[in-house]
Length: 225
Image 1 (spheres, rainbow, N blue to C red):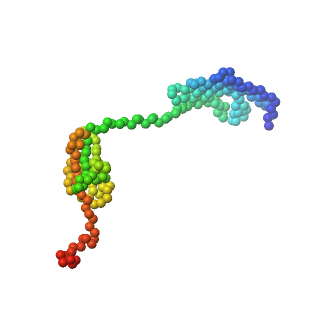
Image 2: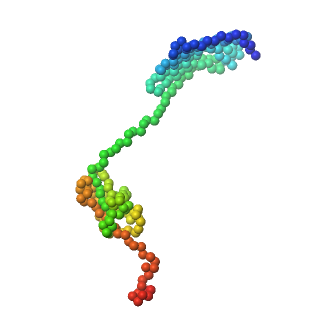
Image 3: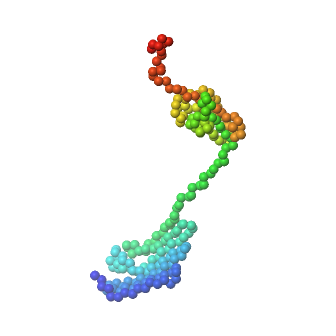
């Protein structure tokens, strides 16, 4: 066991960005000397330390003294370069360097709102009594559209075009059995003013469900066939 005889150390800050420290430790078999300093700024951090290091492989001289440096430099933005020296287990001076940065995901681009098309596809679905059918399903080409509370639907596009028009009875949101009585096969987009004057109308009628008893045919004499 190594006995400690005396020691001396100091640590002081010379400036807000500059500090130094040191110590002297005298033991029976070892006199350790340490002195160092550090400089810190926004762009550069530098430190130098002269100390005694233990080298386990060198049995003849296991304790060696060396000056080690550590430098960190801000290059650009969030990119930092770092370099330092150190003593390896064989007692040799080694050097290391690395770079560090912080990557962040770019903010999502602002959503671009395309201007609304000037041309309108406007149509309505009515029953045979002239009442609007809400929730009727219409296919314009392959795009499904549903009628609103007025029985009408609207679509906008940038250029006037003609589209295939179909009614999908099975997709009606309103209950009941429906049957198409009249329907154009195409629809063409026009200006908004003309679309109100030339509304495409599809007419449907509600079909009453027939019960199983009503399906039986009855002879004029009132006997079942």
